[in-house]
Image 1 (cartoon, rainbow, N blue to C red):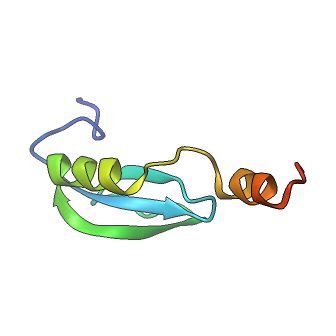
Image 2 (cartoon, helix red, strand yellow; image 1 turned 180 degrees about the vertical axis):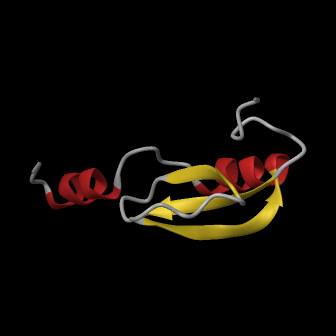
Length: 73
């Protein structure tokens, strides 16, 4: 059985969590708790392009907020 996260012939969605982190997710799997769909069902290539365009800062949201306030938590 091939890895469902690496198949070019499957449809995917892009998930987003509360820390602003993105994940490529096979469309046929249930969305895990703590994640929501950020980009609709599409090809793997288009979903990855969306992630590359949107996720320009890999730091978690909580870290960015701590740094902006001057207090690391």
